[in-house]
Image 1: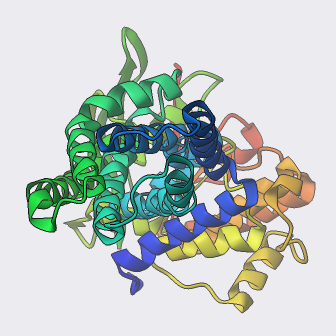
Image 2: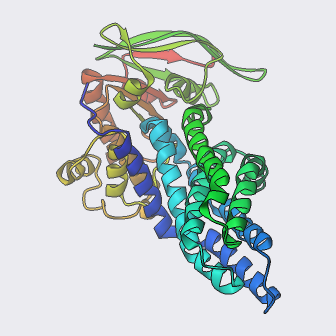
Image 3: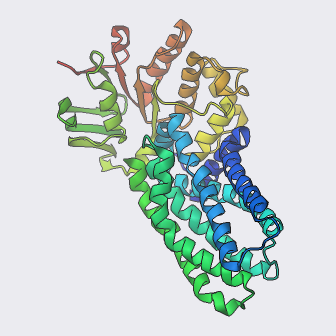
Length: 227
Length: 205
């Protein structure tokens, strides 16, 4: 048999690079995510006017925007393969682990781009306190990993369904509920200016959630993909 | 020596029987044509053999020198061409070839890409997006992708679908070459393609 020298990382990167190239040519998922995030922020900003929000509401508002932005675009990684009927060629050629990791990285990049654009706008529009930015970025990174880990697997599950959009949100919501509660709690404490020790429990949970979701998804993806 | 052994294979979709009691064995240098009228289950049988569908009954075994091959080993040695298998419309022909090579763990050089494109009659069209290809050109590119890994198991469903006379000639030559050096399984209802293979598996009565 010929020597297949490339490892899992190279194969996953091939999937990631292909998805990024297709996304940059169509900008379908990125536009959907950004449009939702920016529109929501603009509406909230105009509605609030000069009235500020409490840290609890600011945190909830931020993660509501992140959750629904993710819902509007992250399923595309698999839906696009299914709708273009390229899923068969991919199944026959690629290792399921490489596909999942490639798609996870793609979703992480999409949500990362969205976060880089929407987060500064959020701080500008809502006058959210910026004193503990480093802690907020830490919460953000763990939150995005958790969001992507869970939603990438759900996206693969719903890609064959007829009502994909609705099903994606409905199936993702219970899986993401503990993550979102913890993210809102951690963000509220950051906006309140509490020290790092006060959000340690939330950070531990977020880290554990991200590791468990990504690991469990890699283990389960093969079964979802092959059916 | 590679082998493919099909034993008592059956497939049902709910109450509807698609096929039952399919048995055959092939080795490197062997070829079989799965033939039958529309709806007789030719494509379903190919998909079951490729592991894309689960059989209701029976087994499919790929082996090398008598030792069972893993799913990953089989995948890396198998190529498939079918009209319902799509490549990426928003990638060029070259980009499609590079992607399918990389994701399979290989590296294809520019020279190899040009040689493959020339082989399937797409010389000079490698930088065009597939969205700009005709259905026949897309079918030709599927052959180029299939030949990337020099397969030991070549599966062809409706092998000359969408192809012109020149394309049909290309497929005929390719099957002739690969049935000597590897194993060819083709599904067709075109009587002139029955001759591509040494054995025939007839479905649908």
